[in-house]
Length: 261
Image 1: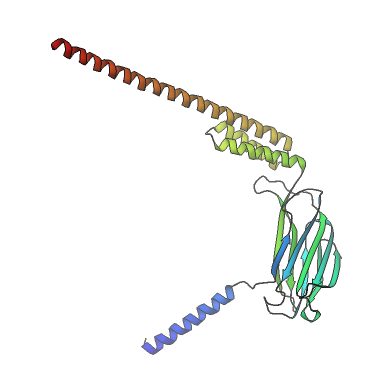
Image 2 (image 1 turned 30 degrees about the horizontal axis):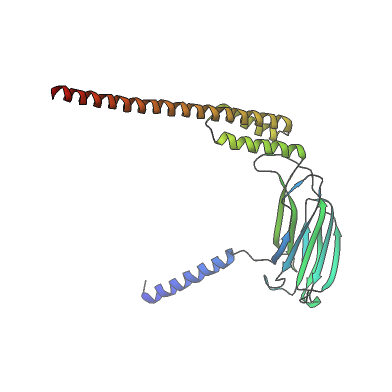
């Protein structure tokens, strides 16, 4: 290959790499400013989540697009508020249901900021697992462009629980901390049984087994401490014995020298 051909080949290869790198970069969507979304809520509780959308026409560059939202909350009400550059509200829309679409964001309307608010009830837990903790979608927002292409703006999730499941989880958490500090197969077995009971939605049993695991771990820890203290005591007696023996040997040597003198 000549020098000129190699140079052309190098430029072509670099151009191909650039195109591939650009193609693999995900398309950025609208920016999310402030947001207030619950992260951990009890089943049946009414909650509200809000998010502010900014840089509405930059990523990608659009003059208008459609906002859509979804949630796993129940008994849902959405409120979409539109503000101009001065901070004045220029429009407001309301939607019901776990999803909505058709909220128009248009630069010609003077909209520079959009605030989305969803209010609903935390849903029941479909499948309990200790790890990972069960979660649900509080709010998901999407940008839909003319032609049907869609970009995800952001999705917020939260964990949810009942009073019984939270008590069982807290008991397992405490037991896990205690079991991690000792080497005890029986304590570990009881902890695993507690987790299995939790996953099977037997929360009272899970809490009881977790308590047993923690008690066993505490007993092992105290036993280890007593053993360690006993070893320290024996070690101390050995040291004292060596010191006394050394002193007596030294005295005997001193006495022997006096008799010879």
